[in-house]
Image (cartoon, rainbow over all chains, first blue to last red; front, side, top):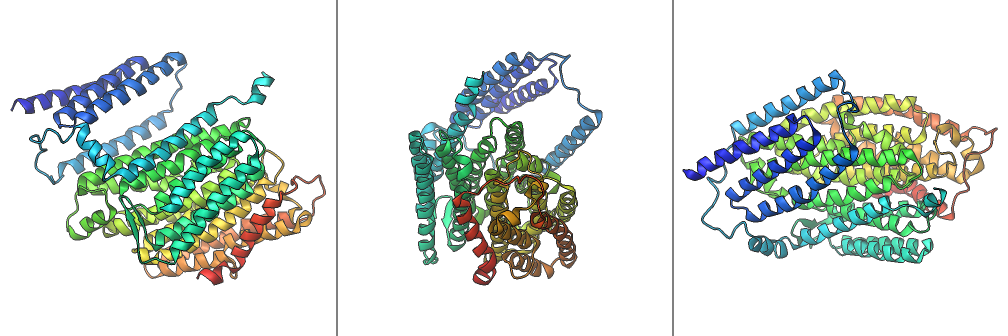
Length: 172
Length: 451
């Protein structure tokens, strides 16, 4: 029972802070609310017995990506005056499109059938690093290794694009 | 699998060899890697019965055939793009390595057996292409192309992931064979599955550049270096369509009542919009971009009308013939001196370099679907197969082929006409002649060998 109440409270907080991301007038505040949302989502993961995902979520999203966001926003010096004007037609189209998506998602959730009744909380080791590592290095070792190609090409690409060319520096 | 490893290893090797700043060595390493990978695939091809299965990958005879196609196109484009790549001696090897990595991803994308591997393959395929689209750093349009492709592509990937999550939630599995079984055995499908299928469909239509999601393609095709435009139109599109086929025609085939009507509308819109916009284009690469939107419309016919891996051959022949035409046309586009590649600058091509002009005309005629050439056979097989289920759609496609002939012929006339001004055509590299000869042979005899 207490778990159910906790779930509702946490869900409400997640929802509220996610709403604040969109509603906050200042972009920096909206990023801060986004970080808060990630923490709440991590709380939800812990309730679902996925400790590893919860920790990774905080380290990667709240830690790395959001801090990057904050840096970029502070460098950009955003204010109301130089905010790009959006056309009313575009606003209307965006509202209609996302409204339709929301209706479809709600309708789909309404008649969801549950494949497994309830998540297993008895097996505490399931969501830990140990179980994940076991799977990653036995069953899913090939996708795991192949994803290294992805990281390597992303790194090479980033360096290639960001590197200043010699000719350009000479001209400057 | 060994081809996949060879491709990746030669990519890394090329990257290190580029430290020597000798473009020729990079070229030799990259093309040797591609050649060895291709030969290994040909050797595997003789034993189609012992399928090699890994977690997430399955190398059956179809996958081997698709992988071979990807390796062939990548090799041809690496060779013909050498003249462009070697302009920057420091980075020649890096560019080629990224192309090899991207081809590795394409190989995963045509031989996946679960959604997990498919997603990794798609990302490995896309990320190097985003980078390579922006390699002309001094050209603003190239940067624009890279950014545009990256943002829209990343958004489409997000939608795709959302769809995959929905499908996993509905079926409880990532494996496409199990998803297929789930759809075929359950009478009432969960609505989450439908939402997932729709989201994946939207993202796929974006990746192949079909009509409501086509806005990126003319700008990206125009701004990218010609080699990468060729790579996008030949390899990325090929891998995208094969994955599209494997997922929709095969795995989601049982639920086709839900997605087929959407695809019919998209196919018709792609054909008309692509063709009617292509007529007005004055720039060569934009023309190719719009005509490729039309070709996406034709290829969607194959997705609609096929339902098992056994008849994927027609789709393969269609995309294979299209790829050769693309390689030829983009190799020709590399020869244009001017920064904006107007069709008018091709004037006098056939008179100055008769062989190149001849191959370019072959490629255009093959795209238009003129009989003895390879392109005709591809179109014929796709259309004849689709005619049983969708006769009206095939009639519309044939009308569109007719419209297409107009702008292909107009380009041919420009190439044949006499040039009274200074020629805009660069002297071709010897590798251009090699690539164009291979493509010419494929375009002329391909239809008789492969059909």
